[in-house]
Length: 81
Ligand SMILES: [Zn+2]
Image (cartoon, rainbow, N blue to C red):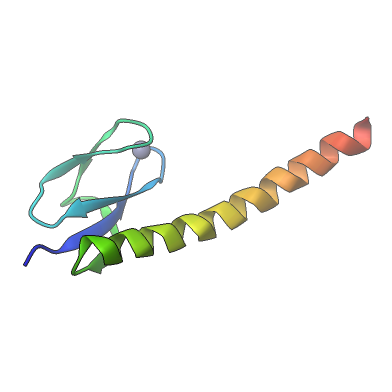
């Protein structure tokens, strides 16, 4: 059975799914080549569906952080206006 792993890109820290049998993967966000052996593995899953689900959750988490910092920046800007 193929295992799926979720790795982060060294260049942009984006999460992406790779099959455990793959050696490299191209980052879908910045196009960097991720060498899976050296990449930081965040999670693993037995199916593509599960991997996608985990990835979605990770992205939601990251998005929450991003939204917070974006809002902070936004409010700073809006106070000046
Ligand atoms: Zn990247």
